[in-house]
Length: 260
Image (tube, rainbow, N blue to C red; front, side):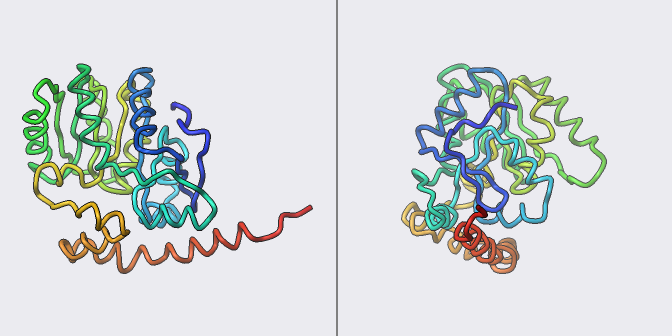
């Protein structure tokens, strides 16, 4: 796998983060495409850090990530609290359309993988309308069970190899998309795999993205919780509060005197 793009890669919990601003992140991803070596692009938030505490597959995926960018104001501020000056928050949703625009302008093929039934098709239609030269090499939304027989992974690999995309956008959510990227990345080179979470829903108009001021104040989680309470309450109200203990552990570890 391609080496990490940033010389200033930090770690929170078991998740690495590259200290790149938006433009530098975009350049790093485009370099992966132009080099033709493949790679994976991940955008961790608080939930990813919490899940990586217990999921060794997710840890392995992040350890091998080509680019890993801080997605979420809470994780961004946590990094600052730990003494790391990250340039800015860079989400998968922020990167999605600029990368699609690049693909349209430079004759690169894209593949949309994941999302709810019908969403990838609606997303592709809107993107082609917005970026008329765009070549959508394929779309698929397979049912993905990471613990079952790997036949599904083999089918995805075969489909991507046949489609020959330069960029593959995955919208399965964490940890599925990160683990899947890690498992198939080498097999689908030179495609670069980019996790974009809910981006298909936003572009297709199925889910309204939080206003920028909400995101900048670290309240996007509350905005999304209010709009999808049944689906997101277990994550935001039950699972993610564990991040406070992880952060405290990191603070204590950094303040503990080093052995002589």
